[in-house]
Length: 205
Image: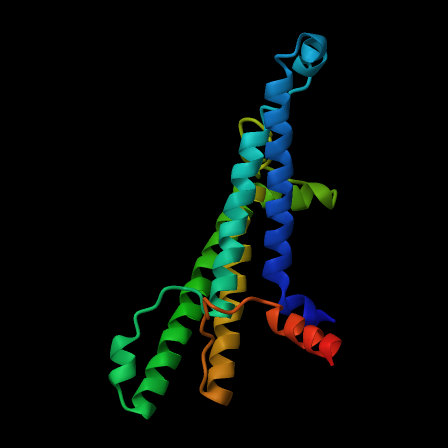
């Protein structure tokens, strides 16, 4: 079950964030449009949706971080492999592994530094406060201007997305060690189209 969740984690997160952002933007646009209608104007102007734009920005940033991890897993990131293709097979193998290890190291370091920043930016205070412990001189941390959301929550996308990218780099490296293949994106492939062809073939038969 856990493996199945991890296999499609990015798609589910991106789909949820994209759907939520679309819904929030729709509400904000309709609110702005309908606020000009005399009958609804007084009631709608009491509703404050000034936070909608800020929330959508945060959701799109989180989408970008999870999208990067998805790109590693599916091989959709832009890569220059002209030199690697010219190398002998053994050298190409170790060069590819070196590149994947470098990606894992980089994203792991970024995730760790990002986690440290998030912790010191207010998460430390939030955790201690949640547990009912003395916060001492630990600062509460800044909040966003519109949502008044603790900024560490928005910044948490850096460690979360970077560590997920690190995991995907390690998974791709392990798969490459076992099979000698790395994921490649096929622009002509449509997810689920093969299943539809099988169903259509069974229906005809």
